[in-house]
Amino acid sequence: MAPANMQATVSMLQEELQATNHEVMLLTLELEQRVAERTAELSRANRELREQVAVRMRGEQVIKSLNQDLERRAELLQAANEELEAFSYSVSHDLRNPLARILGFAELIKNNSAAVLAEKDRQHVEKICEAATQMAALIDDLLRFSRAAHAELGMKEVDLNGLVAEAIAELEHDIRGRNIVWKRPALPVVSADASLLKQVFLNLISNALKYTRPRDPAEIEIGSLEGTSEAWVLFVRDNGVGFDPQQVTKLFGAFQRFHDKREFEGTGVGLANVRRVILRHGGRVWAEAKPDAGAAFYLTLPRKS
Image 1 (cartoon, rainbow, N blue to C red):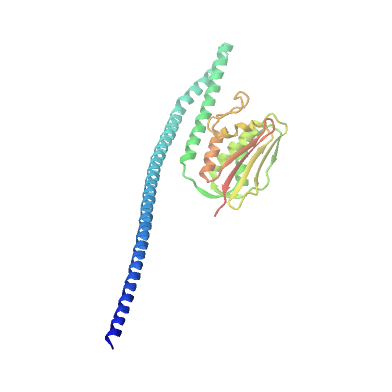
Image 2 (image 1 turned 90 degrees about the horizontal axis):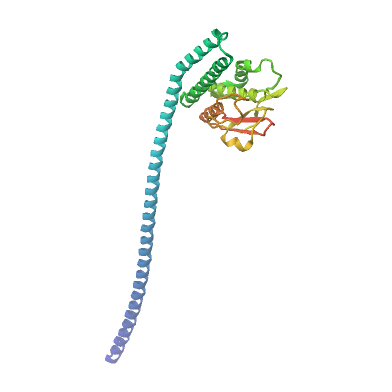
């Protein structure tokens, strides 16, 4: 190759190399810029992720702390309830013997000394007997209320037709001499503690008998609704004096009374006991009523799975 041609070739190669180096430099700068941008994006993403993790960890710590506080409060509430139940049971149990003696001696005075007592004194003795009898009924209701919370449930199949018949038979003294129209369609067989469920129907039927005393005839219906595939819906309905529906939220609380005790006796514990038993069975209770237009009490019991 001639020297001139060789020199031209070398020059051309040098120019191409310079152009290539320039392109490589530009590509390198562009790549470095992209790497820097991507690094900045990753840095921001990592920072945001760390912040999110920190916020989540703080949130989880707050939730954990709240749960621990809730557990402590639940334990304290459980302990307080157990102490209150134990106190109620102990007081009620310990009061029975002295109260029985008071009632016994008052009855002796009334029966053996009536002829020598002044009318005013006889009235005083009669009031002592009435008060002691009412207190004895209250103590019995409190003891049942306490047992309903702690007694182990003996679940089995219960034919409600037989159970309701037994409850009505035990209330014969409240039924005798009255004009009562009973409506008792066929009831289902349920899974329940028979003894506790019987107390439920004794309370509900006893209330229906009590608050229909002004009616002639009294109408009392004990039945079931269609319910759902998960639960039975049962009810006790009457045509009695009813109550103000605005008071229904207080109805199932202990010692709640909506009528003058001089007209309708009672301790105010029965419906609270009904609610406690049904809640322990996994059901619920509610009521509907109007003044002087009767009342209906409903309860649910889970069907057997």
